[in-house]
Image (cartoon, rainbow, N blue to C red; front, top):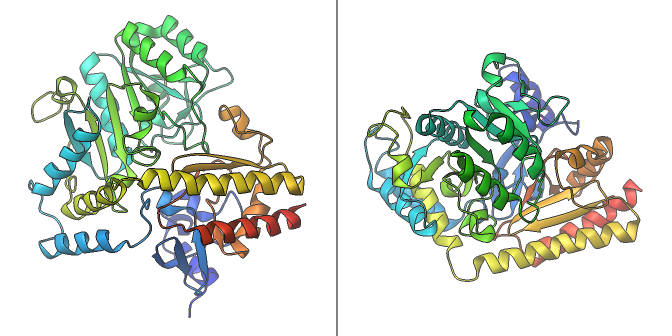
Length: 426
């Protein structure tokens, strides 16, 4: 039997950093990454045979649990017909019809192979429709690895963006303006100074990429009003929150309608997928009908479409989100109670099946709050929980994910592990 350490050594000889996505390398928490051999329901097993209660959920899509029989059957049926065609297939239309039915403002969908492609395409579409170059994003909100979005704020919230990754041209970064999440005045100031240049505002309506940060009352409504006033498009990045906090995404809960939405994760049921969606008058500016070019060889892949349709079958069942939210609430309430009992600075919150755990006295309102966490203390807690057989995201700035496969027994076992870990943490 191989070990996690030997597999990591092997991987580092052929993969950059031994991984294919940076957070997997455990740099934020130290130690050796776990190499997963298989997963089922609410559990994963590593190559050493160790079982973990999984709160990573492949970073969101496994809302029904790993290897659900209904999803596997759909994937097998699709695979027997062919893995990829490079031509239209009926499953694309079926999944698009589901999305249109769940989001009243959505009339057209364009599938991609990743969330990064979806947000990148949404930005290009917004620029093409408005004829403007600048985009507004929020510090701490991650929208994938497109150059325009790998930008964070400088010393001031209203400064032009500076690249936060090598290889992003400064000339491109200057078109990205950075505001503060939940700080509407910072957005108003950008529009006052650059309104005629701003093509769009892109935002996670429920932030999940600086850990879970909920929108303050009036924040999303304010963004909607500013965009409408200045002729800019409002883009909701619901790659993470879509179909996870509610069947109709965060926009169904908040009642704010964006011009464009980006989806991913759940609509692929664990397969690589993304989507841009919106009204026909905007979407049909895309090729082949309009001048904004967008394409992808594997977009609308029949296996991914089948997995997404099967997953939507499961989460559309009556009561699914009520059960998911109630059980996730039990876990979050238990985390908060355990922290109070142990006298440890730790808190948690959730929305639907998306949750956050923080080394803070109270949940954060924005990126600055998230950054106040004690990273070393989180790393110790993470490894204590890993030793207990509970797999949390390996970073203090990442949300965690609950699934319909997590049972009351799993929640109870997790909370027992939390109490032991907090005693050891002191």
